[in-house]
Amino acid sequence: FFSTEQQDVVVIGGGPGGYVAGIKAGQLGMKVTVVEKRGKLGGTCLNVGCIPSKALLNASHLYEEATTKMANYGVKCSGVELDLGTMMKYKDKSVSGLTAGIEGLFKKNKVNYDKGHGKITGPNTVEVTLNDGSVKTIQTKNIVIATGSEVTSLPNVVIDEETIISSTGALALKSVPKKMIVIGGGVIGLELGSVWSRLGSETTVVEFTNRIAAGADGEVAKKFQKSLEKQHMKFHLETKVTSVVKQSNGKVQVTVEQVGAGGHSGTLEADVVLVSVGRRPNTQGLGLDSVGIPTDKAGRVEVGDHFNTKVSSIFAIGDAIRGPMLAHKAEEEGIAIIEQIHNGGGHVNYGAIPSIIYTHPEVAWVGKTEEELQKEGIQYNIGRFPFVANSRAKTNDDVEGFVKFLAAKDSDRILGAHIMGTNAGELIGECVLAMEYGASCEDIARTCHGHPTLSEAVKEAAMAAYDKAIHM
Ligand code: FAD
View 1 (tube, rainbow, N blue to C red):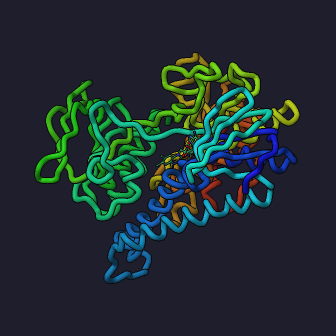
View 2 (spheres, rainbow, N blue to C red):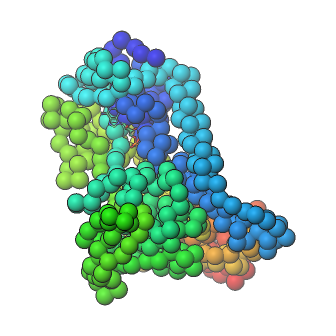
View 3 (tube, rainbow, N blue to C red):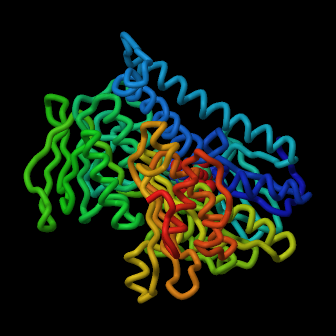
């Protein structure tokens, strides 16, 4: 659905930032075009990120439950076997259903959609090389850069997506590797490492720093690592990868070097090596130079507080700018930038953006960690409540983890909430809302929570921050 008219806004990139911006603009009656080169909407998140990884996490969790746990509840599963091909088809179906859904939303909201590569050629012009090879130029009042990010590798490590893979390859392996090495103990490495570990790979994570799950509260990260170790994942922390070489026998040799007291030196061997060391913004070939828009050292478009670049008609959002590389952060920015262009409003509260690791147990947090509060010299109270004392977790026979609130010592205002446990990603929503409204722990504790639910652990942890929990 093309348009040749001058547009109010052209969005380059159809990921969570760009497609949400497109829909919001359509809803506000603006003339809007979204340019996406992938051939499908949804960006990294829907095609090779959040959605396929969660489909595989769900399926591999069910497989693990069927093979290890269900008999305990009188559900005897005989002859349980893994059919990886069907599991991958289920994952592909979750992706295709959602990407097609966005096309439907574009039509409903009158969003023009150009399949092609967008390049800025002036403050008000975008040149689109359509996927069929033809070229067109769109005139527009405003341009929103939402080009997202792509996988990066280590120096001299060539990703072939078969034996040396990125997250994209890890979502499409054709067989379960006997041994897998995951380079990088961040969210993506831990999620995809645990998928393959559950399906039978001996999985070892090599991490440069002295902890996993960067960004999470230190206490949570330690307990989380122990939990993953119980699930047979191995960890080499304070260990640097110096080379990754494919051998003539098809295996991959990884040479590692100790960088701290807990580190490891030597060589490791695996059938598959997953490189999950971060992502780099997609800002090359976008024509930024032609309009004088600078990028920072990491390649991100430099923006001010209102997503504004040096050119007053050009804005940028999502993974292509500073801040956490998260789909929901990109979506918030997509709405905010359109509202801003439309009527000058639009705002994102970066202090209340949740982070979630969708392993089992899940890890979720919002706001400050203890380490951050200590660094900033802020006095705080802690309220903790373990799921082992929560009736729903007990009846579900799934008691690992805890809820932890950090609240200002003087006012009880919530400064951070950290959860490790089943459904932590859903439970954190209440804490994010509380922080958005500047709530205190007492506000949560005096709110009636349904029984028996896991959310009662959130209430009790909040209680423990300023008084005493009831069930502990
Ligand atoms: P993207 O989603 O990267 O979309 C940008 C789009 O722009 C792409 O489709 C690209 O093809 C297109 N594009 C780029 N340049 C051009 C151009 N010049 N012309 C036209 N089109 C162009 N985040 C979460 O919040 N939760 C999760 O559970 C989660 N899981 C993840 C799991 C994995 C394995 C990965 C890799 C990422 C995950 N993320 C998750 C991160 C999330 O995917 C990103 O933060 C999010 O997709 C960023 O959205 P975006 O719109 O900024 O960019």
